[in-house]
Image 1: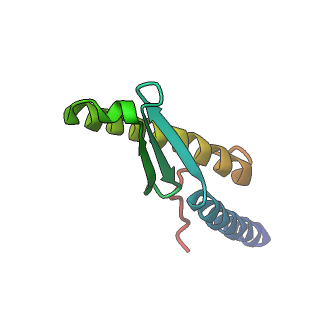
Image 2: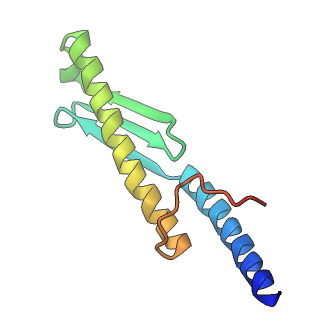
Length: 106
C-alpha cells in the first residue's frame, strides 16, 4: 500500500508543479511579425492580443493586405508562444511531454 501512497503523493506534487507552470505561462509574452516587420503582434501566455503595431508603410497598403499581415503576425506569435510555453513546461516536468492543460483526476 505504501507504493500506492507514494505514487499518489508524486502525482499530487506533479499537479502542483503543473499549476505553477500554467501560472508562469500566463505571464509569458511572445511577439510575431510579418512582412519584414511591417506588422508586429504581441500575445500573452493565454493567447490574448496585447498589442498590434502596424508600420506607417504598411498602412499605405490595401486593407486586405493589412489584414493578411496581421493574421500572419498573429500566427507567428502563436507559434513563438507555443515554443516558449513548451520550454517552460519542460522545466517543470523534467522533460515529460505533457499537454499545457494537463490535469489529474483528483
